[in-house]
Length: 369
Image 1 (tube, rainbow, N blue to C red):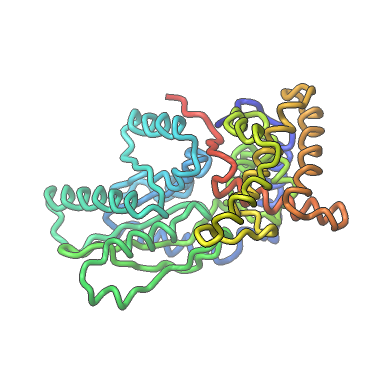
Image 2: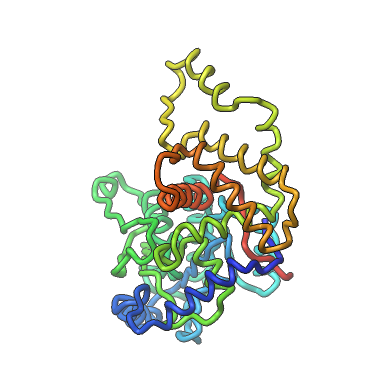
């Protein structure tokens, strides 16, 4: 779901990122980013396709702004909305229509879904065939993946490589590009083969930002999606922003059925004990296990449903979020620590569940078709 309201906490997070980008020390924009920009600028004129990878939750905010610096270029540009499994499906359809209406060649993909990547690879191969029909004489086609940090370029490159290799001999010689949830972990341009006859290679590049970010609203969305290192803002503030957006959406209403059971955790535990051979073990400290996720959803639904404050008001919303933090300490098993450390642990787990789609599907901006 999206939200039209600009929340105070979102503005504060965005302002903090803008301020950090102006810091001479540039904790998030180091020499490696400047070097990457130079390397990319040297290679762009030589590639056949530019795959601009964006986050499907932030289709505009995750635009690779530096492409404007390289324009015009002769390569065919394709806008790829990655992480489609995390976005609101209805909003994703609107965004695809948005790009189509502006004559953008675009595609939505889930880089962790084999069938989805296979279909994407077929799409890319069809583009390669069209290129050869138009007179491309080379025996090798190159595609450069570009994007801001943590939009999933490396994961997509690896998936394309795994599915695109053809001969059995190639299977034993796989090389992988580094995949990490931390933005900025890819340091070098890496070439991976994704097709033969003709040969097709993708170039995985480091995620880079412009030297300075100016739009606070864009920065807040990028921070929540994980494109900017969490320690610039702090996980607790990001989790508060996350809960604010969740509370102001309608996604939580889908969890109403969880409250029909008086004890969801107990019910699941009894189920597990009666058929333990067929079910995986439950670890109460693992917040990603289904029975914990169910409890988190139930608590969030209950706290929103009984709240009598004005959810359009920043102060009232803040009170609800603090109530939720207190309730979540119990279901996430972090009650024995000092308050500030307990909140940090709750925040870390909530951010993880949000960013992996366990708390619903959210698109952070509307498409204006």
